[in-house]
Length: 135
Image (cartoon, rainbow, N blue to C red; front, side, top):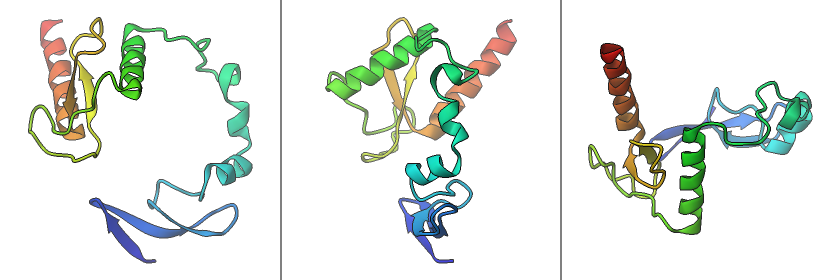
């Protein structure tokens, strides 16, 4: 099995479990070469969408956090807000990579800190510890 390193992640030549074509993917994460192969191989996925899904909430944003994330996503899509280039904590330059928007206050949905995934998980770990101490 050939391995290729792209952007710090390892990709392998994998065989689609539906159509048997060879594709480049992440081992353990991908079994199909495309969404269409996945849908044909697992037709029950289509049956679990929308109101047929047990987690369906009527298609509405139910929490203030959901509404804040939706507002931010729309603002980024429209270009009102630009995604950060560097992590606000460690200043790691992700150069068009993956930064996470962290809301300090959901009532201000467009005020976010752009963090790398590592710092974002550390921030949430600290918040959980603080809640345990104050409760």
